[in-house]
Length: 138
Image 1 (cartoon, rainbow, N blue to C red):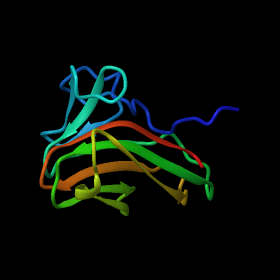
Image 2 (tube, rainbow, N blue to C red):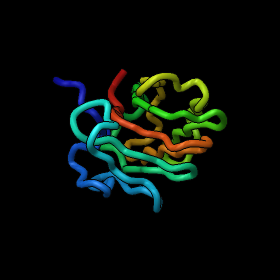
Image 3 (cartoon, helix red, strand yellow):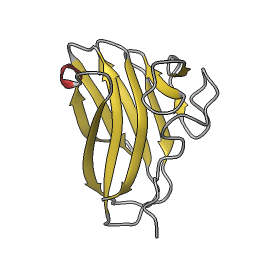
Image 4 (cartoon, one colour):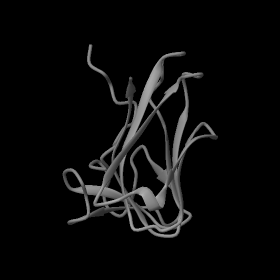
């Protein structure tokens, strides 16, 4: 059995710029970009300062360990890229530490509910580009 990505449209390839849909919803400034700023394939998401994207994940298996992974690109000097699962903050990546074009970040977590929502918020002082988002069994 393959290890299914619980994030749908994690590379934003199903999105028609500038919309982050389908599957993702975003705050007012969150958009999908195309044409040179992506890591993989044709699209990436862009989150201006203070904006976020979110989506309900495909169902998780209770008490199983999952790995979140995403590629971020920013020139931020302060602040964090915040990851929430169903309203609970699970990780804050320091914007200053995101170096180079697209750096992959990951962490593991234990599923405490089957139906959860993933949210990514830009709380840095600069735009954040996101690509290749996944949540898979660790």
